[in-house]
Image 1 (cartoon, rainbow, N blue to C red):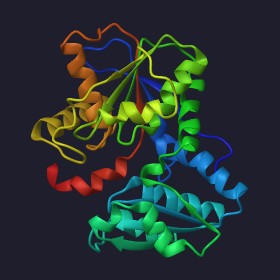
Image 2 (spheres, rainbow, N blue to C red):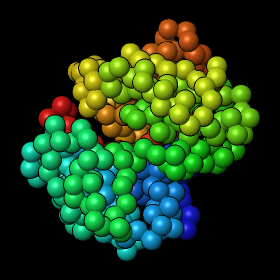
Image 3 (cartoon, rainbow, N blue to C red):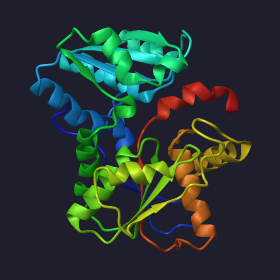
Length: 289
C-alpha cells in the first residue's frame, strides 16, 4: 500500500509535562490511519500470499477499521465485504466504505457475535475470501504494531497507548522486548472490564513488569463519553493543536494527566504517547460537542 510512511515523533507543550512526545501514526494516511495501517500491513501480505482476492471483515457503523480495510482493498486491487453490526444506517463512515467499493451486510447483534459462523454462512464456497477479525486482531497485526518501537530514535521512561482489542498493545510490548528497551508500557483500555486485554497480550508475548494496565479510564464503556472527557478534549486540542478522538486517544491522554496528578508518573519523565489515529470517530459524536 505504501512505499514509505510518515509518522514523526513530535514533542508537545502541555502543562505540567516537560517531556511529553507523541508518535504521530495518525499522519500515516487519511483513511488507513494510525494502527489500522500497522495492523493491515501484514494481514494483506498474508492474503496475497494465499491468493485471496476478497477481504471480509467486521465492525460497527462508525468503525475506522472498516474504512481502512475498504481503502486498503481498493488500493490493492482487492474486493472487500463488511458485516456491519446493527440495523441499516447511513453515515459518513459507511459512505466512504461504499465509495471505496466495499459491500456492506448489516447484521443483527445476536448473529454478529459469531463472526466465524457469519463468514461460513456467506463465504464457505468462496476459496478467495479472506477472514479478517474485527479491528484486524491477529498475530500478523501484532507484527506491524511492533514496528512502531523499531522506528523510535530516542528512549522513554513511559510509553502509552489506548486499547480496544489489545492488538496494538501486544505489538508494542513485543517491540519493547525485542529492542530490549527500559520503557514501561502503559495500556489504557477504553471499554469496561478491560482486564481481558492482559489475556489477549499473553496469547502472543510474555507479560512482564514492563506492562501496566489502567482500567479506570473507560468513561462508561466503549464509545462512551462524559462532559468531563469532552471538556478535556477541547482544552487539550485548544492548547496543543492536536486532535483527539473521544473513543481512544482522548481517554489515553486523560489517563496520562491523571496518573501524573496521582504521582504514578512524574512531569519530568520522558513520556511517549502513541496516537493511533481514528479521528473520523469524531463524526459519530458531533452532538457531544
